[in-house]
Length: 156
Image 1 (tube, one colour):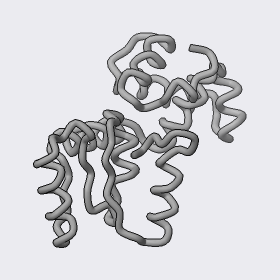
Image 2: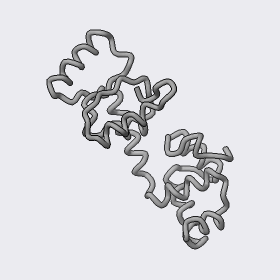
Image 3: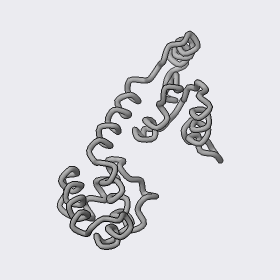
Image 4: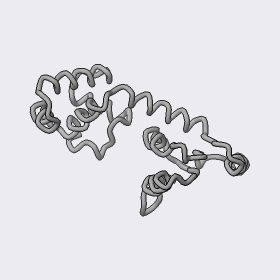
């Protein structure tokens, strides 16, 4: 699972991915971004824990036969997360993370080696992409959309 007791399943999955070993995931997660990170070519199966026994057994047989089996609902969550991630550029995501930390434009500019005007441009683009009018709404909407997690925000 992606959220194992005591140790995050994501760490185990990253280890398997680095070793290029095939794996399957049985999960209760509905976090599309987390699922997308896990669903690499090495992931041969991504299945919800809510599957009934017959469907799970069928999926495992298909995986063992070499078929890649991704649950439709989980695939939809992955696609939605990837679409959300495409809303912002990498630089805009960096600015968003610093916004979530409560930094003003001047400090964001200093941290990223940008001018304050460039940061203002990025902030405006982020707010436009998220359909919000102010920084607070921006962070709330980014959290709702899974663009940032609660651990990314010290101020909200």
